[in-house]
Each structure stands twice: as C-alpha cells, then as structure tokens.
Image (cartoon, rainbow, N blue to C red):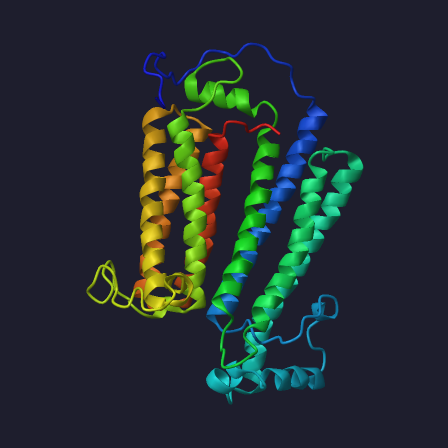
Length: 383
C-alpha cells in the first residue's frame, strides 16, 4: 500500500532529528554558487525558448540563410551587406509566397529577431563555459559531476547545429516554414538540456542532507532513509513525463500551424473527435502530419496533464504538512490550471502572438514546477 495506515499521524512539528555531521561551510557555499549558476542558465534557456517561439510566430526564423557561428555574431554593418542578405532571402519560397514586395525595411524587421535569437544562443555558450572552467579549476565541481556538465556544454553546441538543420528545411521546395519533425527535434533537445540543468541545480542547492530533511518534512521522523509515499512519488514523476510529452505534441501543432483551425473548445467543428482524424496512411503519419489529429492529440494530452498534475497536488496538500514539498506541489497544481487556461485562450484567439508566446513560456514553467515537485519527492535527492 502507498501509505502506511499503522504509522503515527503526520505532525506539523516533527521531532528533532538525531545528530548528524554538518557540511563544511566552504563546501556548502561552493555548492550553492554552482546551483545559482545553473539556475541562471535555466533562466537563459527559458528566454531562448521564448525567442524561438517569437521567431516562429512572426515568420522570422528563415530570414538568415547562412550559418556562421563566428562571423554571424556581428550584424550587417553596411548597406551592401544588408542588400546581399536580402538578395539571399528573396530566393526562398517564404519570400515569394508570403512576403514578396515587403522591401528591405521589412526584411530588417524579421532579421533582427532571428539574429537576437542566435546571439542569445552564443551568449549562453559563453555563460556556461566560463563559469564551468572556473568552478572546475577551484574544485567547486566534483570529479563525478564534471563530465556531466561538460557533456551538457557539448550538447548545447550541437543544439545550434540542430537548429540550423531545422532552419534549412524551410529553404527548399514550396516550404514557407520549417519541417515540423525538425522543429520538434530542436525543441526536444532544448527541453532535455533544461531538465538536466535544472535537476543538477536543484540537487546542488539542496545538498547532501536533503534526504534527511525531506524525510523529516514528510513523515515527521528523524531517521535517515525515510522515503515519501510511493504513490505520490510516482504521480509526480508521471506529471513530469506528461508535461514533456504535451509540450512535444504542441511542437507539432506549432509546426503544422494547427492552431489556426478548429478554434472552438471543447468541441472541434461540433465533434469530440474531428472528422478526418485518421485520413493519412499509414496511420502513424497522422500523429505528425495531420492537422486535425495533431490538434486533437495535443488537447487530449493537455487535459490528461491537467488532471494528473492537479490530482498530484491535491494528494500532496491533503497528506503533507506545511513545508517546501507541500508548496512545490501547490505550485504544480496552480501552474497546470493557468497553463491550460492560457492554451484555451490562445486557441480561441486564433493564435494571437502575445498569447502564443506566453503559452510556450508557460509550458516550460509548468515543466519546471513538475520537476521541482518530483525532486522533492525523489527517492534519492542527494548527489
């Protein structure tokens, strides 16, 4: 059974824990510095995802047709360079089919947003590498953690290549935007980096005594090794997976511009399951290429996530005493409700740009809330 009915009731004032060896002050300070650095990197990823959403929604992502990791740091510095880049842009389908005749000033408008998106990515690389080298040299990062952080840096660099692979798909045939599968691959890699950094940051912030503190907070006992209720722990982990899956499904909605149709809720053109849900063959193609199916799937996943996250929060609020874990679960429930409402508003507005950007940022914040809750309830939270 997930709860021990024979155990004494949880008290808001747990008894004192047995004495344990204190962590050295210098080690604690170094650990917290590493955590703050990684929290800052997570905030930069959140901004990056928001910029990426803005470039997609405004059609700016295809405005730069060259991948120049070093020289591309500088914007065009002469009128001749502006004209050269604009001439390149006029060769792609997006210009001919969507933006033909909007002139150099219109091109500059979309160029600056995409350039800012790429510049922010370069800034993230520097903001990650320099502190990593410093913390490694000063011993603030353990030998066990250093390879993991180095791998994250490498994957962050590869994310730039994946981004170019995505953008290049919009330069061919009659495409006026990028391929949805490549868009979702780019998004998935960004989320994976975010999840890894946030989890490591939370572990560093809470430190080696976190498991004992967690045990006392949840069950009012002082012994090491006490673990939170298995059901609640499993629900929190499922919430993380459900949020992530819903975000990726939303990537296909964005890639296919599926939010521009079926702008009613909860029914889709008066039907619970839209007509033509399985119109493509083989059937799996509907999951990534059918507007009706992609939007319906995202709705179903979002609803399931809302129910699971609020159930997890309600269970925790009913079972746990006041403390950080209870607050984390309350935040999870609140974030799920807010994000669902924002998603409905975005749909009914026929994807108004400001609402769509908020919806994308809200998805990452909901993922953050679910990760924090799962971390608090984890079997093993110490490094």
